[in-house]
Image (cartoon, rainbow, N blue to C red; front, side):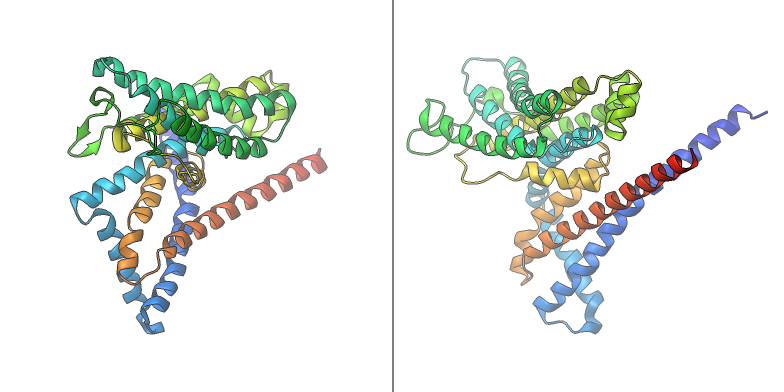
Amino acid sequence: MVSNSETKSNKFLLAAKYVVRSLAFPLFAIFISFFVAVFFVMWSKGYGITQYFTALTDLMGIIITGSFGSTDQTLQTMNYVTPLIFTGVASAVSFKCGIFNIGVEGQFTLGILAAAVVGQIHGLSPIVHIPLIILSGVVAGGLWGSIPGFLKAKLGINEVINCIMLNYIAMYVVNFVIMRTPAGIHGKGQTPIIQDSAKLMKLNGVSFGIIIALICAVVVFWLLWKTTKGYEIRAVGINPHASEYGGINISKNIIFAMVLSGAIAGLGGAVHLSGTVYMTTDLLSFIGYGMDGIAVALLAKSNPIGCIPSALLFGTLESSSRILQINNIPKEVVYLIQSVVIVFVATDYIVDYFKEKKRKKGAVVNG
C-alpha cells in the first residue's frame, strides 16, 4: 500500500520533471542564439576565431550594462518588459485554446487609445479614474478580440487573416481619433497628456504597472490550470473533437479565449499609457509590443508564469540595442538573437506535432 508521503513525493518528482522538460528546450534555444550571435560580434569588431570568449564577454557585458547599468537604464528596461508581459500572457491564452491571436497588436493599440481618451476626463478622484482607465482598456481590447473569435467560432473563418486586417483597422482608428476628433491636439498629431488623477503611481521610479502585469500572469495561470473554464480552454486547444465529444462547447470557449486574450492585451495598453507614456500619437506603423508578445509566449511555451522571464529577456535585449550600436555592434544582433530563439522554439512545436501524429497513427494501427 502506498503511503501519503510516497504519493506526495511522486507528485513532486513528476512536477519537477515537467518543469525541467518545459525549460530545457527554451534554455537551449537561448544558448544557441547567443552562440550564433557572438560570431557577428566577432565580425563587427574584427576579432579572430581564438577570441570567441572575449566577444562573448563583450556581448553579455554590454547587454547587461546597457539594460541595468544605471537607474535610468533599469527603468527603461522595465518600461519595455511590462507591456511584453501583458502581450505575452494574452498570446499564451489564445495559444492554449489552439488559436493564433496575431491581433494582440491591434488590441493593445486600442487599449492605449481608450485609456488616452478616458484619461482626459477632468474632476475625477484617482480612486475612480485609475480603475476607469484600466476598465476602458480591458473593454476595448476584449471587444476587438471578440470579432475574430466570433468569426472563427461561428463561421469557421481563419483568425489569422481577420486579426491581421483588424490590426491595420485599429491603427487607422487611432489615427482618425487623433487627427479628426477633439480627443487629439489639432496640428500636433497626439492626444493631450492625461490628467494626474489617471496616472499610475511609481515605485522607486518604476510604474506600478509592473505589479499589475505580474498579478495578471499569476491570475491567468490560476485560471488556466485551476478552474473548470481553464480546463475547457486547454482541452479545446489539445483536441477540439474529443472535447466536443466530452460535452465541451467549442464555440463558446474559442470566443471566451479570444475575448480574454484581447482584454489582457487592452489592459496592457491602458497600463502602458497610464503608467509610462501618458499620451499617444498618430501611428505610421505598429507599436510592436503585440508582435513581440507572440515571441514571448512561444518562448514561454504558452505558460503565463513563463512569460515573465521570457518578457524580461526580450525587454533586456531591446533596451540594450542602442548601447550595442555605440560599442560598434550592430543592433541587428538583438533581432538575430530573438529570431534564432523563435526558430528553435518553433522547431520544438513541429517536433511535438509529428510525435503526436505518429502516436495517433500507432494507436489506430494497434486498435
